[in-house]
Image (cartoon, rainbow, N blue to C red; front, side, top):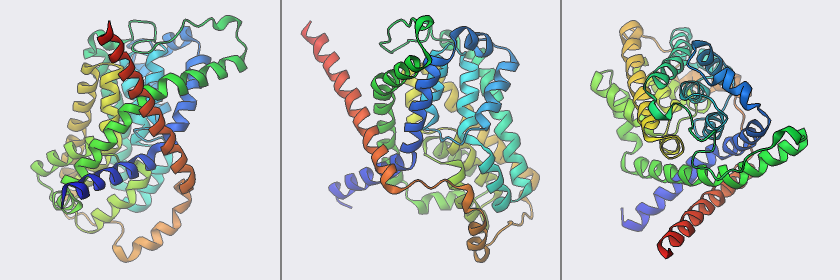
Length: 362
């Protein structure tokens, strides 16, 4: 493979990764804008701005109900953090939201069977709560934004008392698509490019070889690879089912599913830049260790003599019966959303360049 072919493959894979999540990112920008200017900061502070277990349960359960991927949840999680939520509830929310949702549970039951699905559901609830507890305990100075929700963002003070609901929505959209989108977009694109590089360097044959092994070393490798890859829970469950049907251990499959859905490079980079290094390292470590533990316990509990629910000759029929669970956006819509995300990211980098030139000029 020559250099230009290598670079071309990286960009193609990166764009495919972006294309698969761009629609959810755009939806999340809209939701984040609405939340930022319509949520009462005092109510947010009272509900999620504390270390109570009730705050973690609220954020976890609400996250489990939203079918949004780990890239799409970035604006929502950052929006919650800026609205006064503590780091614990924020980590619980951004862990639960991409990891599990009703459609993914039903799909998992049909393709992976009740045993794996039960472990999947329990993990989807327990891991976010644990992430929240650890976030509150070890969050340090990042436990809450010290600037009243404007850390790293050039936001003006809001005088929401005299604003109508329509004014708040308009203000929220301006904030989200002018400021938040530029900041998040540049880190998402960077993460996608890094993900494309990893996929070129580590081809599918390499992943399949390790996914087929039930050993602890294999689980550890998969948990790290999954944590930096982009995996959509609903979209990748058929892939996980195919791996299990072809001989992969159920523990390895769950390690890849949980670690991959829970986080990825764009998310880790965004948390690092927009919340803090400690939060990003804590979150990444929690996801890697948690997916490893779940995979190991799964192999211990049901790995021996495990019989897959489906086989390759049944996969087509099973997929036909659950197609209605997967929202398949038109390609033109995903392409438009991807173009907008790229524009947001480029705008963010241009703004950074201007700031750098301005500082050097002074």
